Amino acid sequence: MTKLAQVHDLPWGAEIADAQWVVFRAAIAAARDNQIPFALGGAVALAYYTGQWRPTKDLDMYVKPDDRERLIAAIREAGLRDLFDEQPYDRRWIYRSHVHNVIVDVIWAMANLTAEVDDAWLNRGPMLRVRGVEIRVLPPEELMWTKLYVLQRDRCDWPDILNILCSAAPSVDWGYLLDRIADDAPLLSAVLAVFTWLCPGQSLSLPDWVRERLNLPKSDNPNLPMDRQRACKLDSRPWLRLIPEHSC
Image 1 (cartoon, rainbow, N blue to C red):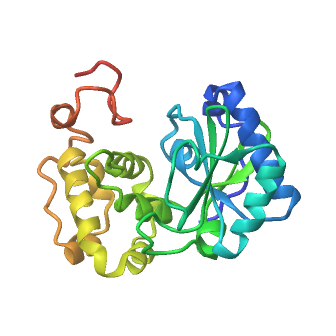
Image 2: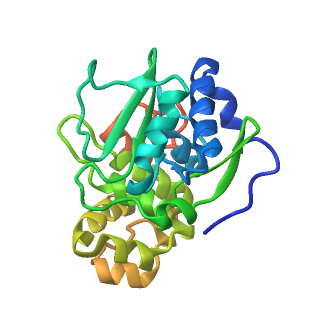
């Protein structure tokens, strides 16, 4: 899954606000200076797989549990402070730091504590270059795996998974992902069923054995990459990367 670093900066890097990038770059440098292995998730990883930057004010840095205290100390030394007193959070899986309104999250486990970050999270993903800085992002499998469980009353990350599938479904190691998900495969089946309904043509990139194993529906219109009317039923705002703005 590992790819060589891009020769040129990825174009969406220019859309990251300068004030945010200064903080992001300081946190990345702190990890590098202390030789702490990490990979980026969140908006940076999503932008790599979809080609579109989603403006956020946070950077997600994934590390193995044994390295979390070292990275926390390093970013504290870089000038970021704990967000807990202002916005309490669950310290069992994340440390949230900030400078003004820019947030850097240190993450070593899933929010539901189903899994902890291991070497595969940090080593299997592609290397890329953003504003001259080479960074590694999470593999698509781990990125989708962790987002699969974010299905809450006030937040759902399944639209992110659908956007990743639109761009990267052919490159996903489905056997590896299913091994990771294990007994929670029905969740993956559910989001892939939505993908098949929403993008009947693109869903043909899913291997037949995956469809059979997860009992997925067949594409009802294989000549239609994406069904705009169905996408607009879910949200009239431009949320799917294949839909031009204001198309609903």
